[in-house]
Structure formats: C-alpha cells, structure tokens
Image (cartoon, rainbow, N blue to C red):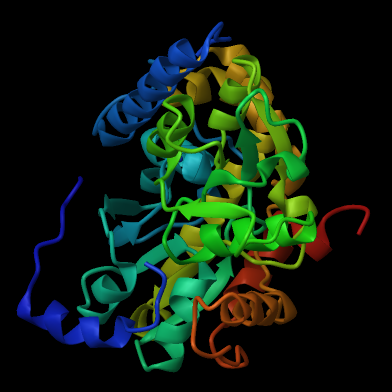
Length: 377
C-alpha cells in the first residue's frame, strides 16, 4: 500500500537532525522520439510500481523451492519500508510484486519517503535503502538507525551522456552540464568524474541541477543542458537515439559506496529475525533475477515499460555492478564521507566506525553463499 507522508509535529522535531544531509522504448530514431520514449518508460515504471495486485508480466512468478525461508514457520509481520523503484530497486520490486515477501510471512507496507531521515526520526518507517551519505550523518547525530547491509549494488550506476556533437570530455568546455542534484551524491559523482577527465568544474562548465530519470533526460533532449549524469535505462535509450556516452561513473570511482539498507535500532533489538528475513528475501530475489535473466527480463521490461531488448541491454550493461554482497566495507563508507566533504556536500567527514552492523548481513551472505562466501571465493 502506498502512503504519502504527512508532516506531523513529531517530524518537525526530527527535521532538525537533517541539517547536513543530502536530500529510476524501443530503439529511437530521433531525440524527440527518445524524449517521448523516456517519458513513457518512466510513466510505465511508476504505474507498475503503484499497482497493488498482479505481476507486471501478468502471471506471478512462484518462489523457488530452495528459498531459505521455505523450511521455517514464519510468524506474520508487517514491515514499513522505503524501497527504491525503477532500475535502482528493480529485483526487489520483482520480489514484492510477485509475493515473495508474503511467502516469507512479511507484509511490506511500502511507503513514499522523500526525506528518509525525517521519516526514521519520526518513527514512521522500519527499514529503507538509499545513499549512505544521507544516513551516516544522521546516525552520528543520534537518529536511532543503523546500516545493516549494502544494497544489491553499491557502486554508482550512473552514466555521463551528451549531445551527439560532443564526442570527448574536452568538448564539454563552455557547456551546460546536468548534475541531477544541487547537492548530494550524484552531483559529487559528476564533479569527481569530470575532474578526473580534465574538466575544470569551476571554469569549463555551467552546472545545472536538472533532476533525475526522465526529467533529467528531457533536459538533454530539449537542449536545456548539453550533457548530464543519468541512470539506466536512459543511457541505453540515449545511445540508440544517437547521443554520446562519455563514460560510466563507477569506472572512475570504484571505492565510492552509493547504496545501503538501514533499519531502526528498535527493529534490530526487538526483531532481528525479521531484519534477517527481509535481507534474505531481498538478496535471494536479486541473486535469482541476476542468474535467471531470461525469466526476469519479460517482467522487467513490462515494469520499466520498455522493449525487452532495450531492457536486456540496459541491465547487462551494468551486470558487473550486480554484486549481491550484503556485507558492508567500512573503508568504502569512509571514502564516501571523505568525497562528500571534499566537494562541499558536507562540512565534515564523519567517522563510520559505529554507523553499521554487519552481523545479520554476514549471516545472510553465508546462508545464500554470497560475497566472500560465494563459490570460488
């Protein structure tokens, strides 16, 4: 069930804790067609994510018999969750829509939380995913939450795309560059990648906070920006429309962590078994989707409202990032903090020693044979 948070007195108090925080088609023949396809993709994804019944592919995909929760009696529980949509949360949405959480005894009350730290501070959400740069300062400032695992991918799955006439990084000089945000992780990623490619971010470009997903892509196709940072599937849509792909940001920033799951201290102390069940479903579904693409792609293409070939290309172009490693690496969290400070997104780089707890993540990784427990490691 979707809910849009109302501003409550309790939340007004919690907002004080967010002072330093950083707030998801076919082949196209022209930029205008690409723009229309992008809008259609976003609308389709939103409609699919908003659906409360049935699978995007029509028939629900049953939970495989080897799912770890199948062998247990699972006490029914409701979890208030703020989960990513679109490409960022695609396999988890697959699990939600196909009833895999329900099969594990979990009713996911999926919430829209534009300000997750405020929602956690107000006690309105139990678990959520997102950028560690949002959560680390909050934890240090006594918001009662803890990082409990990585997301299914924890390296920035962003692309730099540009108008067709822009062929090299040097061609960006004197151009308008879309950083998505006025502050936060995507802007910082933009600035770091541009700097590493010889672009003077203070002199060579005009920075524009041009939004995300279809909004950001539309600013490129309309000419409001000359290049932009973007998520899939828009990089694939842009490439097919003749736009230039200048780079994949993760190739320049492999140590930067962009995705974690966070749970409340209350849930961790009172319901650690529920946190483990959530992570089991989350990671089992992501591992299953990655290793059964032929089964997953028909659902994914309908969820994203794009042609299946485009969905395959978009997903496979980032398959190296689909690491499915639950266990958080503290050195990467610290690198993230250091970069946010370096580029002025935070006044200081916070220490990360006490912001995460890998206990449950390690148990799930061992159980599902992920990360360091995967065969061959």
